[in-house]
Length: 120
Length: 107
Image 1 (cartoon, helix red, strand yellow):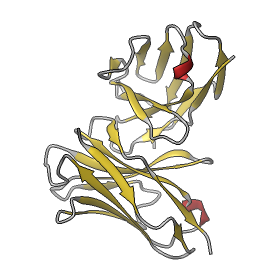
Image 2 (tube, one colour):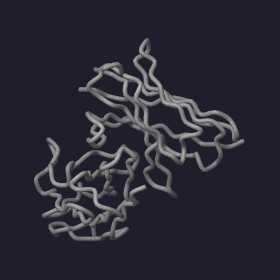
Image 3 (cartoon, one colour):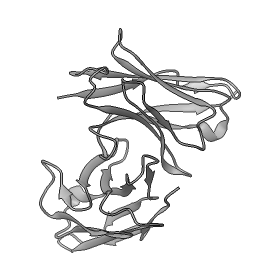
């Protein structure tokens, strides 16, 4: 059964860069049959889709975050990565990675999530 | 963006009750709607896709209905294990959006 696990620093300074990783277990990030996404959750805004990635290079980003976000894959470590620049306190959230079978599918498998706090 | 609005925000019901949660889309999304269940400290779990298709392993007391802009998640007989927050999500466009959640409690 495919599993996902997020990792990365729990604390990031304001104006800094947030870098998170999602390791894929019992599956491959380069499997062209699936898409991968990042979603975050805050008490104030609830669940917010960040972006979607396909190994072919297709990426879609939330327009509200597009200028600050990059999603990519590291096949050597079988990981999906998220990079978010110029972070502020409003980026404090639990960050999840998740899988989609197709773009017109919901997120069927989620990681456990990782909490990121933006603070000096 | 397509806005998703859930009601109510909080729902308190007794074990055995039939429970209904509503989700409204700001424009038609056909049947491209999912429902998730989230328990404290856990990731959301997919319950229903395409508005009414129950995911494998999800108890049959859960059901979904609707199309266009109006959708409903129902639990036919509320169980203690159903205490959670429920979210709808549209995937009509790749700019996915979620409802704000409905917290379900036991009276």
